[in-house]
Length: 189
Image 1 (cartoon, rainbow, N blue to C red):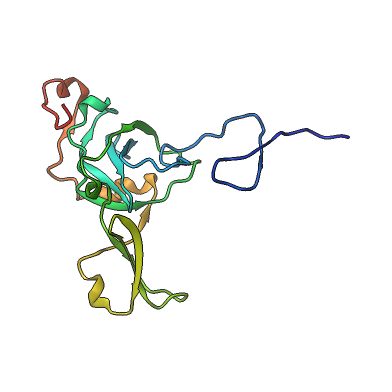
Image 2 (cartoon, rainbow, N blue to C red; image 1 turned 120 degrees about the horizontal axis):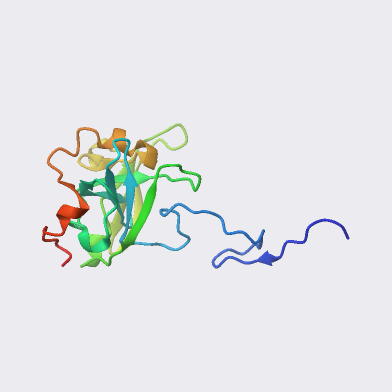
């Protein structure tokens, strides 16, 4: 028998085995195999500043502050996002990212995030609304445009697109310097 022998391993939750080369694959902090609700990841923007993204059930949200370098968990100003979006992140993403930590939500409803809809396209001519119903993520379809009024339209952003997405939306957000945060009272403490 010739060739290289690679052992078969089974991944939890997946029926088919995969070949293992013995080397761990680099994963983006956003691409965990298990749901990581409440996780916060610092992402460097084009300006060199860092933004903070929290994972929710339906979406992701930007925490309303920036910093000059990644903050430690105790220095985060707040854990409540005020700008929600949808994330698409490849493991090969080159944007610098740092996993800050996972923080439980105070209430289950807080973990849901913001509902969104997808617009009709050539495959499905209906609006699809993604929302939480009775604590479970659900979808409903409609042809009535008035039903999506006031709901966020889904658009996926990659970390490399965060600078453009945030342009003009961060006015009034504090920019924290690690040395200065020592005197700042945090909602987490």
